[in-house]
Length: 275
Image (cartoon, rainbow, N blue to C red; front, side, top):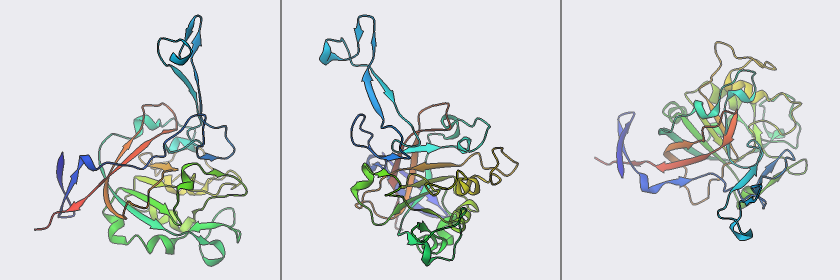
C-alpha cells in the first residue's frame, strides 16, 4: 500500500511494503546484547502436572516461560516512569501511528576534544555525542520538522547485535549540551543504538534522562514541565545499507504496564514526489 503525505508543504510517498525493522532480534538462551551485567534473556518450557510445553519432549504444544530485563536485554523503549515515582506505563504512552522521523549517523568524539559538559564530570577516555557532532548532521530546519530522531553511531558494525557492555567496553553517551538541544525541540521519540543516553557509571544520576524528560536533577517526581509524552528507545541496530534521511516511524510496543518494554521500531522511507 502506498500513502501520500505532506510535510511542510512538500509532498512525499511511503510504501508500507518497504518496512525496515531496526530492532535487534532477541535470541533467548543465546548470544545477545547485554548491559550492566544483567542475566541474559532466557526461556524454558512451561511444566505443570503432566503437562510439558515442549513438543520435542512429548508435549502437545510448545509453551515457553521467558525471563528478561527490558532495559538490559536488547532493543527496548522506556517512558518517564524510568526515573520518577509516578506510574506512566509505556504501553499506554505510545500509540501505534506514524510519526515523521530523521535518521542521522554521528561519530562520537573523545571527551578531551569537546568543550561540552556532563554530570558527573567527563574523563578523557569517555566517548560522547557532543552538540557540535550532533548539529553537524542535524540542522535546525530538519530538527523543527520531525517528532522522532534515530541516531546511528559510527563506526557501525554487527557487533552491536550481541555486544556485552561492561567496564572494559563502555558505550558512548550524550553531553548535556547535545541532549539539551533535543529536549528543547519537538522530538517525542529518541532512538539510539547505545544501551543508554547516559554514561554507564554515572553515580546513579541519569542526568541526561532528567534533562530530556524535564525532571529536576536528582528528583523522582514529575513537575508541570515534565514531558510524559516522550520516549527513549535504546539498543537499536541500523544496518549500513539504510541511508540517512527522512522516514516515517512506527514504534511498536506491547501493552505492558511497566516503565519499559521490548520494542520493534519500524522505519518507512519517505520518497519526495517530484512535481
